[in-house]
Amino acid sequence: MAPAVTVNLVEPTTLPHKGGVPVGNGKLHDSNDVETADGKWKDFSFHPIRESQVARAMARRYFNDLDTYAESDIVIVGAGSCGLSTAYTLAKARPDLKIAIIEASVSPGGGAWLGGQLFSAMVMRKPADKFLTEVGVPFEDEGSYVVVKHAALFTSTLLSKVLAFPNIKLFNATSVEDLITRRDESGGLRIAGVVTNWTLVAMHHDDQSCMDPSTINAPVVISTTGHDGPFGAFSVKRLVSMQALEKLGGMRGLDMNTAEDAIVKGTREIVPGLIVGGMELSEVDGANRMGPTFGAMALSGVKAAEEALRVFELRQKQNAI
Ligand code: AHZ
Image (cartoon, rainbow, N blue to C red; front, side, top):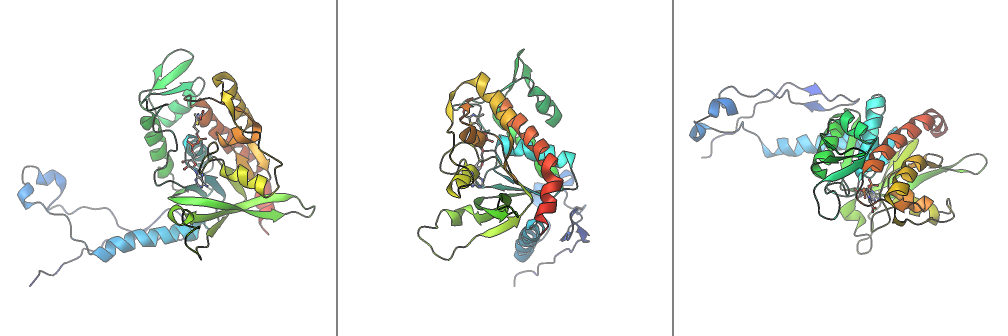
């Protein structure tokens, strides 16, 4: 007969945000800790677990997060270099705000895992080095620009900081499929949240029916979905199709000097409730692309956070109804 599995139940505590679910206290057994196993791996075993504990540990937290963030303060669409820089700046400035990041891909980071082409190093022109110092990413100083030895070091460091904020939830493998809209008394359009679906579901709308989406209400949405492509420039293309923008300017050819300044300076609220940053903005303004220099993505994120906080109280009041 198989030996009975004995399960150690741990003292419940709660997650930092409201309505938290119980989590373990993280204490290890002293009998088979990794330190004491040194040289005695034959006797080593993991603490016992029942499969349902694993399933519940994941499901309970995920559904609690869906519940908690169904009303968010700010939604960031896209977790590329601009979206992650926005999230870091916002969460640090306003730990009281609930910030949801929706990322279509399983892996957050967008195009920032490589520097350019398939090269490793990431180049940022000054003064974007200030953002690297703030986040704790080491770099080589080359005078007017700095070089991070691997783009993945930038993205993994920034991502780890972003995910550590208790007021941020990243929903990856989740796509924004539409925008929630409201009309004010004079008929003006305002963005009031996002319509979401699991990306794998979103990819099968053509061959499966009855796969309606879900929603997140928020007074401010920040869209950073990159330049046009299968998933890119999502929100601004939707603004055109709902006739809230007449047309897109279309991203222009590469000019590093012009492009980076234009993206940072132009990061703004395009329609009430929707701020656009990063390369998505190049499609609205007809700005140049900059290719493999990433300073504008970091500082557009900083500007997007500033713009969001500038309009937040007003949009929150308008969104109360
Ligand atoms: O998966 C996309 C990527 O991670 C995500 N995304 C796109 N559409 C989405 C949707 N719902 C949820 N509907 C969506 N997520 O958005 C992220 C965009 O990241 P990115 O790296 O493509 O854009 P960015 O603006 O943060 O950085 C652009 C980097 C570039 S492109 C460029 C050039 O072509 O010249 N130069 C630079 C520095």
